[in-house]
Length: 217
Image (cartoon, rainbow, N blue to C red; front, side, top):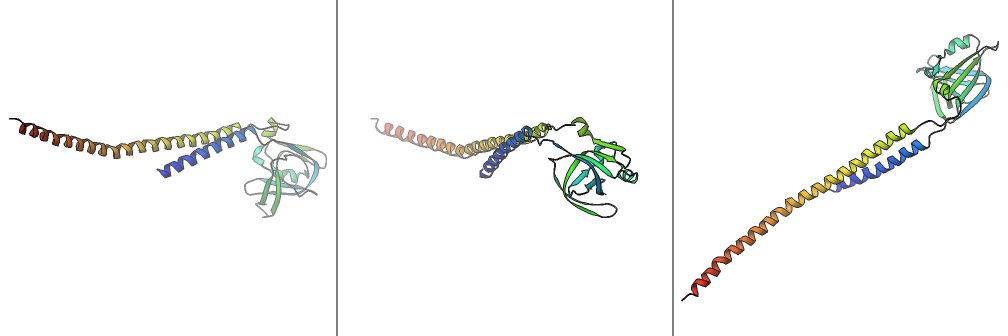
């Protein structure tokens, strides 16, 4: 009984907390804000085993992350660099900072530091020719915007509702068990009381009749 009560209480508290978290997630999305880096020469560029590129420009320790699967058309960095495209212009999401620890899949060169995801990159060669690649996200939202996080928030709220319903179910189960135990324990006692009363009444009836017979002339 005590265990069920504790589990029901914990489920209720967690459910309420998760619902509040879902409301916060849906109503306060992480704003996507773009930052532009002008035409700068490339200092380092490595490609990790998963195909993700990591870029640094001259005079800047910041790492810029190039997820080639997100760009259209797909970026072939080796070909671009071989064709003399040694300068880049970058647009990245300045609110999505992450810690980078990446190794080049060929040379095992290590790149570590703070990184930002690139949403648009332009490669420039010495003649001024340019090759621009954009992510689908940037094509749809070329300006700063607030993403719709309500689908995630509603999913989290749903988990909270499930926990609250589970808490209510455990409470009803506990009440049902208590009622069953009450009947189980009180039933025999009530029956025994009824039997004892009936026997007592039965035993007194013959006595009263005997007294009446003895009093007759």
